[in-house]
Image 1 (spheres, rainbow, N blue to C red):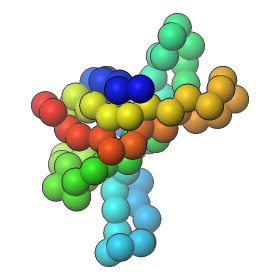
Image 2: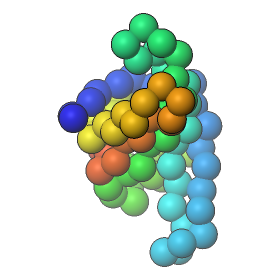
Image 3: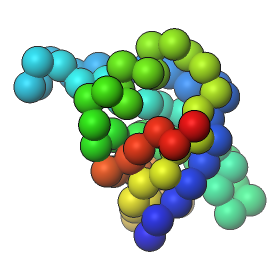
Length: 80
């Protein structure tokens, strides 16, 4: 499912694979419930923008595997 969300408070995490990738971790309200979310980006140029820690609007494919699981956005793009 395509999902769009504005993030103002988030943590920037990284891994060491492929020269390192940054991704976003946050808590959002989704369908009236506070949930953890991980956002993985499609373009490395979007990943670098995370380091500014500014408010961003992100769109991507959302996977929800149940209330006890973290939401995951893949193929995400920063659109603002």
